[in-house]
Length: 105
Image (cartoon, rainbow, N blue to C red; front, side, top):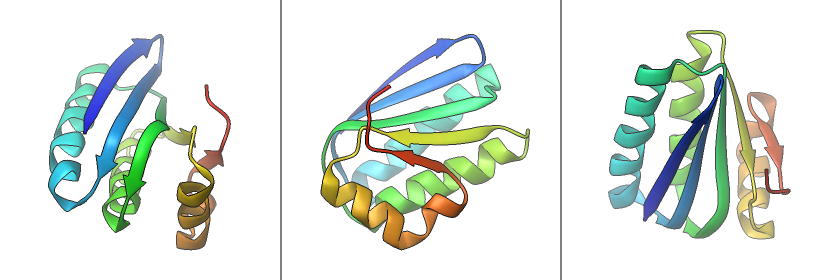
């Protein structure tokens, strides 16, 4: 699992790649949280285009970043999901707190 982080203005984009599970989610959380703390973005984009597997840890990853960024009135946009990951995200109810889009940014 890897994450490529870029910042453009007030938008922080995290491009995730590989598998998101209990073990990999810990490192991803730390890396994304550090970038949020340093940049204080108003929008966090989580790009799942290169994620080929995700268990419930992926839901936790998104929810935790939402809680963190919403403290400063920021928003989360999740994009580039495969059909299966999109379905899991919708079924989890994440759509009520973050924007879900299968398209890639």
